[in-house]
Length: 274
Image 1 (cartoon, rainbow, N blue to C red):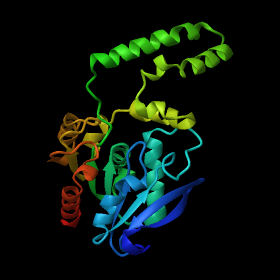
Image 2 (image 1 turned 90 degrees about the vertical axis):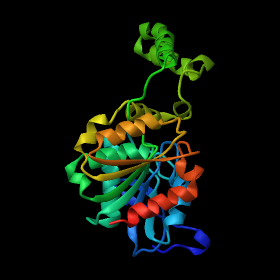
Image 3 (image 1 turned 45 degrees about the horizontal axis):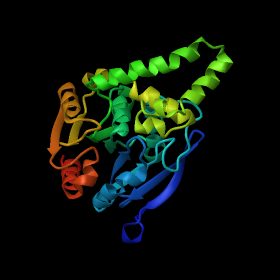
């Protein structure tokens, strides 16, 4: 699919199972493919600036994950493995057995680590760049344990009620300011199945995947990342067989937005290299 005028990407929808998946695409249909996997709470639009910068050299394809952007949520609560299977099915639908490159951010990195650690999927991908990748177990502060204990205390009285009354009571309790103050901003903004998806995905730590990955993986991290701090990047690099970490100064969790020219230059050099 060719790029439209003045940097406006082509947009289409692809069917994967029962899901209609929205895609953005920059660049020439004949270029080497880079598949962009966005982070939690984001969409294809989030990484569009980077895709546009790389579009003169590559075919950049940016899907919305199910439950994000213009792609509907799945019918049931998916875990990281389910998102990995979806991503592989989408890749097969779009590109068949042709290996593609990947730029994965945050939640997208969780999905990519799952794919690369499974031999049936790994051969379908070549160069992989991960930025602000989630999935490493965080260091917990005393505030975390305090919030966890308080949440259990708030729920305890309702657990003594019969099932029907219990669920109604818990639903009301979750609307209180006290309860909302305990949750993450991402969680509090969610409803329905995506709330369950969030819980399933953030509770899975992917350190066991790292030694199973033989791929060359470039880690590009903002030094000021406070969502997935630099120590998590260093742990990821240490666990990967062929991982290399590049740190970007004056950049946070969205390093590709904070330092767009530097990030694009690093990406181009990496995917151009043989």
